[in-house]
Image (tube, rainbow, N blue to C red; front, top):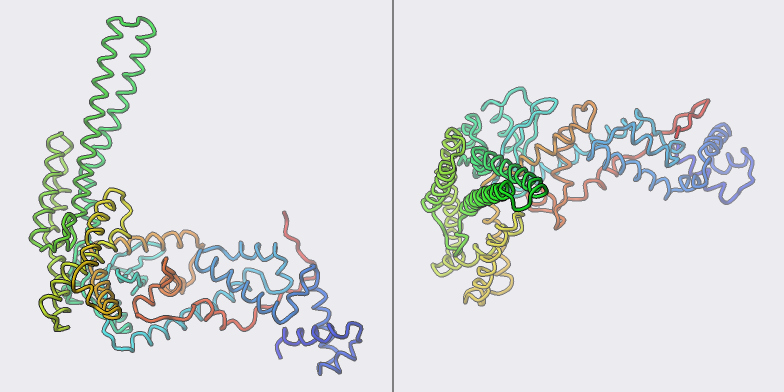
Length: 529
């Protein structure tokens, strides 16, 4: 019988018989007199606070276990709070007389939690990969540098982290060995992969995974912005400074001799400097407009009429916007950044190729469903545009781009609702079509922003820690995949495997059978305030 079970047995007996002797309690509970004496003394030591009686009950003990495990799980594992701080928290709650609350005792519970997390999720992944559904991954790959270099591979549509592994190098051989093992475990294959233009990553896609290697649109925009945006910003800031300086001079001359020659000359200088500010503000607006148009171009549908686009059309528009930005910089004599512009132009054909690649996947799905021409046209020109722009509006934070997408979304929604084929579909068939179209829409991924965000999250978690246990990186991956809830309540794992999973915390809580006992000290050490 465990320590707390014996204590609970004595506590329950004392609740009904408050004045019984040690001998009588031993006879009624079946324990030895020495055990009863020792346990009652321990209960007296624990009952040093008004609320202590609660922890002697079965319900209170169960809730205390939940409190300790939830604190370690939420703040220790998910937020990187140190065990010294958590120990201080438990001291202030008067819990160190009930459970072992020292950093070393809490570390032992933390290690049990980590082991339970990894064991549970390994089983769930095997079950999910054994279904044989042949799920496709649209991957984003990158590396981040923490205590060691960590290779990150993330599925963009679902946000599921396929791989986070420490490595000594980022060569093709290292990437392929790690990725191949994970894909086999998950029972998945890669449809295409988004990344920067590192040679090892291109080789990983084209040779190892035998899929399309898609350039990262985020890096393209960054290269263009890096070439001219800072220069325009500096010119505008300098123009503002000169305008304010001229205004201060005008005020001084006006105070000395209003309407004098010096005052009139200063007023003329203020007007000239203000005109220069206005000119650079217009240049900056035009430059930002070019970048906005560039972003709105790389879509399978036109942002003005929602008509399906081809790779050739998209590539021509991308080149036009990049060249217009280059001409703007040349016209206004900005510093020459030819190397950055050349680097920005290089991936344009590969970026545009994603459009035809996506449409080929859509067409293949529709053909396999043996749909007639009217249904294919309806899906291509009514269903997909509506759901695509609905997703883009939800994801876009820029007010100007959101407004343009909102207009084409409203038009697409009205077109879909009034279409004759839409009206003739029964509710279940319409729901199935929308589910198919949603999967297709999520398959158009042009940037690796999600993996960059994951890198930032790992950096913050690593910064919060003071020395990382060997399993902590794997635990972070598990917590992201199985306990990172989106606004609608889903987790990356349920989206990736297309099935629900039990609550991760409740599952690992059941693995913690008993908490460590409080330490017995000859002299109690009070927390200094």
